[in-house]
Image (cartoon, rainbow, N blue to C red; front, side, top):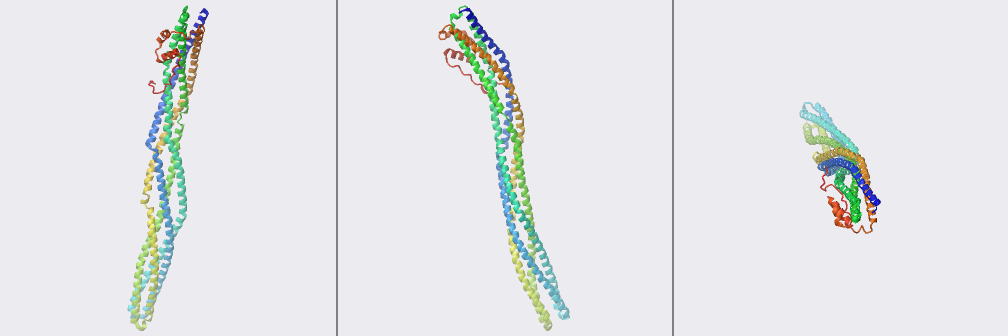
Length: 575
């Protein structure tokens, strides 16, 4: 070998060594910076995962899946409750119409009874006049006249009282009927509107609760993936000790080659050994380059994952669920308002029917009195006829009075029969109305009150879960934003590492240039080398398994071992 060739080869070896030394110096600080950055990210990711686990645990404890069925059950109960009351109120309205007609008839009957009572009072006056004419002869008839006077006054007062009460009750029922008839359509429209509003609120909150149930788990999956990527980057960079040793061993091997080149006749002794050595060093650096490419690839993947990691959706879902819950609670409050209105109707109907019951009591009493009046009228008629017979010729007027009392008695009996028939029909309607009123009782509302309690408890769970998610997610969002703000520094570190890799590429190019120069001096130098000699010269410094694997692949001409990705869980201590 000419001296100028030897000098050129030695210069090339020196340049390769210098490039690798630059690589060692420049990459050390960048790798330390990357390690610190990703350790910080790992700490943030751990905090996010803990908060995500807290949210998931809280949401699971609150059991969001139980909320909707409870609200839906309440809505069904309320719908049935209101529909039953609407149906009952409609039936009661028809009953009130019938009662109003009967009361009008009863009013007319009582007016007829008043006329009979007035007729009796007139007879009483006529009897008193006749008593005065008869003088002492009509002593017995005088007693009859007194009895008739008292009796007629009593009947008149009773029938007047009954007529007044009947008119009042008729007016009350007519007013209640008109109010109920006017209110029922509005109540029905409100009920249908309420059902539509609650259905819409249920549909809205159903989707929100599903998000509240699923979003935390979805977010945690993303956070776990990012955490694994971060841990993988940290583990990969920590393998820098291996690549640094590989580079140092390559520098040492180049020194051995330089020493051999510098000896007179060194190349001539066995140039194939040096070429094989250069091939091994080139392969070692290519393996280092592959490892470093894996680092940068993992860094890029990790940065992409962190950029996509956001708690924004979680931050928004809490207030959204709270708003929907408030809307639904408002709709359920409307149920209570409608229930109170229904109770108002119930109270009015009960008061009306209560007044009617008072009327029935009065009419029943009047019926008993009417029967007594009938007997007394018959007795008065009988006594008047006896007294007329006793008076003989002077009893003509008394006989006429007896006949008039008899006619009044017959008229009273007819009217009493009509009153009894009307009363029987009213009693039938009141009985039916009282049965319908059972629907308005507290017992019928027990199921709804029970469902309201359960629904209130379920909505309280929703409020608690949504408020907790909103609070925790806000803290998570701060951390994820902070993580993303650090990505610029991480990206700069990645670019600086790529620049450092330029020295590695330069060293590989110089080694291959030197190898090509040596091979050009002897066409057979590449195929003819002593493997044992090559291993004696270079394998002694290989303390890492990958180096020996690379050397064996280089000597055998087989593919180089692939650099493995480093991920969390590979028994590498991260911190």
